[in-house]
Length: 432
Image (cartoon, rainbow, N blue to C red; front, side, top):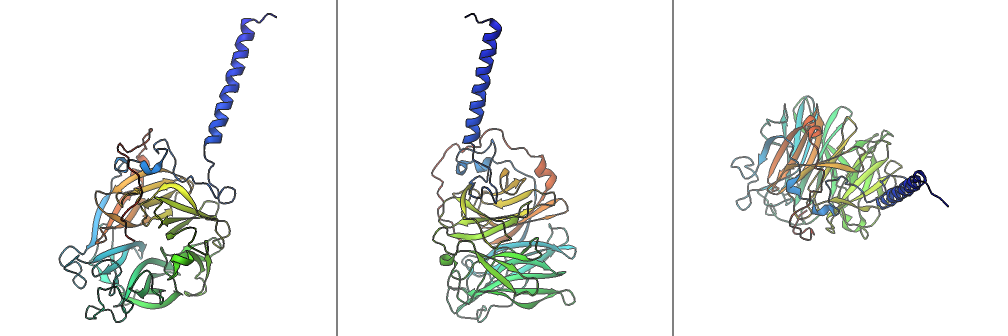
């Protein structure tokens, strides 16, 4: 049998094509399947890109691309006179649980303001306003003194069942009105048996906050409600015994402020010690929720709902690193998604901004602030900018103004951002 040069070349080409096809197939099989709320809710993929090391917990977080921003400080209890009624000589007091909104032509910020360390008896909620999100007015109290827990009370600045505290829970724009959500409960632990979610309504005529009453009994949310395709509102719920029962989502709020149905994610905390849920609506109107893991795995957990929050897929540990800290995300007007978090599993430093095209896989991560303890973020979008409120050492309320054009202009590295010195990134020492 005689094989010509042309036949030999053709044979080799066919072999090469077959080999290339096999390599591509194996590479495709090795690549984790993309997440999907209905067909692949168990996918662990939440962070992707050539810049992401094989173990995303080993990202060189201090080498993340920086994005320009305008920085403002609304309140700082360490500065004399900034919080005269709650200053504690030992620590200067606490400022945290930061929230933003834009209403009535101006920006609004709210936060928890208390004595000593976070969430002790006597803690109240403060707010401030701004015309541009950069220059802020002098803070004022939004809530009254919690029951029997004022500065003159013997339980003030203590952790006891006899003392009460307010905790800021976010702004809710409902039917043209501005509501401020707050929780109220005993200050002994997290949380007291009388826990309830309440609302205060801003009175445009008097420029005061009026008590709008109970929103839900035995509940603390994480962020204010979003509106579903059904027209109903939805927000997360933790009960006073959530460390046993797990987290829920409540749906309703249309007929009245206090009319909601509650739906559990797991119905128990035995499988996941979920904390501070965040969620958003995907392009197909399914829902994605992410949870901080208080077992300190160093990663976010994710769950999906395909029936408007009534049932949820089993939460799955993702490859998105996390410092066991609060996160804030939302969908932008252009359809993309942003997530502000502390991605370094070892500490709440830095604060980073991540971007996703589909709300499920994030491909860009940018450095916002760091070199110190920074946490409790909340992000909003307004007229081509992001505004990110956060706490500095749990004692200051700070805001970053970031141009979306500047975010778009930044390209991620083409090689892995791998930390030079790598230790086991198991979170240690983080507080709630």
